[in-house]
Each structure stands twice: as structure tokens, then as C-alpha cells.
Length: 306
Image 1 (cartoon, one colour):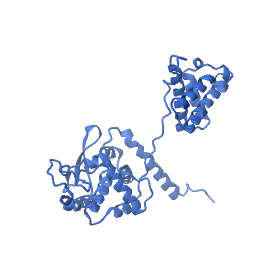
Image 2: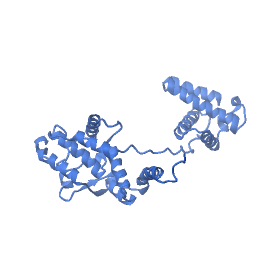
Image 3: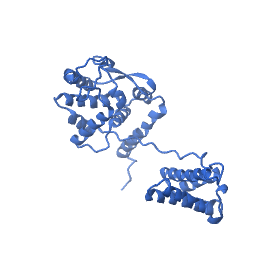
């Protein structure tokens, strides 16, 4: 194994031309694996361990050992990736026939939700987007609708005017997998859309088209998702809101505020267009955190006696 690891590291350096930093990371992970085999798993001197001595159980036991020693799941996954790469190289070199790490699943990574905006932050962001110029009206309508309807940015830029019912304050959108859904929106979003519609013809490309995209760029063409991100970045900077706000932040803010307001998960699932309730259930920890904070601040027995 020692010689195999050395040959593999030479391969990374000479043939794959990886950076010294990446090479050191691979070496550290593989040295850790070899030390585990020699000490905890096989109780055999490292120099005597062969690649054929390693089976899937050895790799799983290595991951379990990392977990017991407090190594995080991301680092566990990185170690497993290094071991997989080593034995993939060994298979290509004819040292072994099968990769023992292939059947070992990577540790499930936590999926933290992006931050959501508190009401004061949201109001500051919307104020930063407002103005009387045509494109300022457009920007406000974009932010209002992203928050009011919880749309994905791809759904937002695909909207045509015929998809919106401004009187009924509801829109039709085609989401992931071609699934159609109807989503309501509030009075502020409807008002912002009407104000944008008043000047929409001034921006629209003069060439007649069948489609009438709701949101246009300065050339009068359909706005792209990257442009929406730049618009939000500009408003974030103007409003002096903390960085890390993206179009999806407004979607998460929409869902979080609904949950905090008492909406049930099934309704939020339908509004977001999630195919599985388990995706929507990621928001429940936010509500649990909020309830715990309320309890700790309010319940007489929650506070430590002085």
C-alpha cells in the first residue's frame, strides 16, 4: 500500500498536474487511511499491508472511525473520495480487479437553507429598487413578485403578460418537470407590475413578436436570469443589506414568512411547486428554532435562576 500511495501521488503530480495544495490534501487523507488500517483495523505494520487486504468493510470502518473522532461529514466525504481515487488508479494499473470503495456511500451532507430576509431587511431592499425611471419600475416589480409568489428566477424570466391576471392577482407558471401551477400574489406586487406595464412599451423591442415577456432588458428583449442576479446585487449594495442575497433568497424568505405566519407545509409545497413534501420540510427547522427562542425568552422556567 505504501508503494501504491507513492505511485498514485506521483501520478497526481506528473500526469494530472494537480496543485501542491491538492497533492498535500490527498497525501494527508491517504496517510490517515493507511494509519487506520495498520493500527485500528488490521493491526499490521503499514509496510506489510497490500491493496488486496482492503475490502468495503475496511473503507466503511475507516469512515466510522473518522466520525467517532469528530471529523465532519464534508471531511469524511473528502477522505472517501481520496480512497476511491487511489483504488481507481490501482485498478487501472492492474494491482487489483475491483475498487473496494465503489460500493461505499458518501456520508449524507447537510443541506443548510440559504439565509432568509427579516421584514426590515426586505423593506430596505424593496425601497432600494424603487424609482420613477422605467427600469427602476421594472426592478421593483421583479423584487416584489419574487417575494410575493416565491418564484424561481427561471420561472420569473419565462413569464409572459398573458400568464398574469392582474385583477385576480394570480399567475400561471411552468415549473420544474414542466409542471404547471397557479400562484397568487399580493396588492404591492400587482401595483408594481401595473406601474411597470405603463412604461413597458417604451422599453419593448419595436419588432413584433408573438411572445410578450413581462420583464425586459434595456434592449427591449426578454430579461435573463443573470441580469436578475445583477439587479438584486445592485439593490443589496444600495440598501446596505448584508451580502449573500440572491433570487433564491427571496424564494426562501417567501416560504419562511408563510411558515411563521401559520401556513401549513402542504400549502407551501403547492405554492413553491415542490414535487415532494420532504423538500418543503427543510423549512420546519427554522420554525422550531423560532419557537425555541420564543420559549426561552418568555417561559418563567426557561431562564436560569440567578
